[in-house]
Length: 117
Image (cartoon, rainbow, N blue to C red):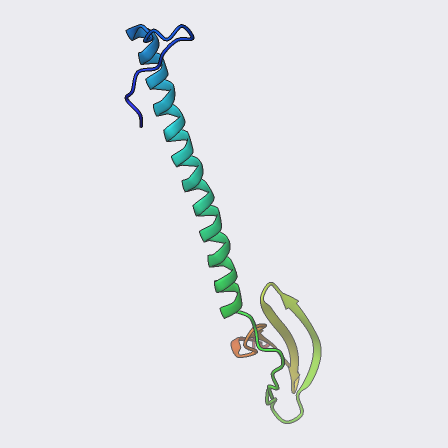
């Protein structure tokens, strides 16, 4: 920041009140420039972070997974729910819902329905 007093068009130094206003405007514009550079830096860092994180969490191009069902089981329906694959299985009259993670295809849960006796 320059503390050199400005001169008016006639070459005379500005009066102290005018110089104070000029100094205040300089401080405000310096703070504005710092805030702008900081804001742009944050945006660039966030974009880089998202690109880096997105590349690391990308699912593999192809994966072969074999899920074993009990003998005589029949798949009655399949679907998706968010980031899960849902498979409905009929196992000898008992209905099961099995869920798998869509990214890794690993089993994450099983819900069995049985008749009350």
